[in-house]
Amino acid sequence: MFHVFDKIVFSMAAMRFLSSFIEFSAALLMLKFNKVETAFKINALLALVGPTVLVIVTTLGLVGLAGKIPLSKMLCIAAGVCLIFIGVAKN
Image (tube, rainbow, N blue to C red):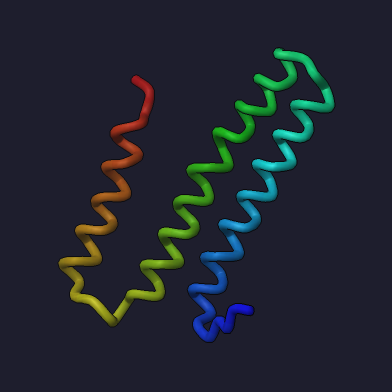
């Protein structure tokens, strides 16, 4: 089916598959418990999963790009990720 030769790409994809499995499982749990309060708690836990996966996958990507692109571009990418978190942070 897919032939993955790069370990970084495989790791990034694996993290996204894990994330989607967690999200899908949470949706099933919401349906199973069938209570707004419980679904809200499950959703709150998912709020931790998304940013964590984003940081891990971005870090893997930066590790994979290290040495392939100039340091200035690496810093721009890292700054962009920081700006995403600043933009969505609650005051």
